[in-house]
Image (cartoon, rainbow, N blue to C red; front, top):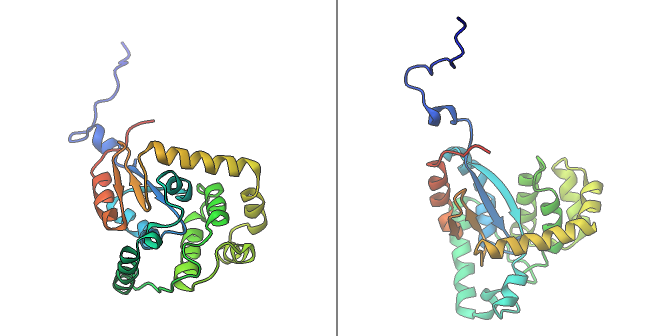
Length: 225
C-alpha cells in the first residue's frame, strides 16, 4: 500500500528553521525635512542586513501631523534651545558617522515633491539610493530639494527612470496615496521621524532607537502570509 504520509523532517529541523529565509520586515517611516531621519536613512540598509531584517521604506509628511498638534513649523524652530541643541547634536553625530552636514536654508525644507517621488517608488529597487541622494543633497550640500530639476538629476544619477518617476509623482493617485500614508502613520501612533514599526506593531522613535528596533525585529520569526 502506498505511503501517503508526508516525509519526516530531517533530524533537528523545525518550523523556525524552515522559515529562516523569511526576514522580518521593519517599516522605516521618514520625513525628508527631518534631520535625524537623515542619519537613519544613511545607515539603515547596512544595519538591517547585519540583523537579518528587511526594510519597508515609508516616506511620509510630518507637516499635517504637526499642525494637528498646534505646531505651524518644526519644533526645532519653535523652541530655540531645542533647535540649538539639535544642530550641535547633528554635528557630533555626523562626525561620528562620517557624514557631511550643511544646514539648509530655509529649514525645514519643502519636502513634498521628494516625498511624492519616494512614496510612488517605495517598492522600486532604486528607493534606497534615491532616499540617500536626497538627504545628501539637502543636509550634506544644503541644496533645495523642492527643485524639480535637482530631483530629476538625482534620479538620473542613481539610474532611475526620471521622467516616469516625476510623472507618477505628480499624478492624482500618488497625491491621494501619500495623504493616506499620513493617515496610516497617525493610526500607528507616529508623531515624529524617524520612526520604526515592527511586524507586531511595536513602535520605536528616533535615530537613537534604530539599532534597538532592528535587533528586536531580528529576534522575530517572520510569519507566513
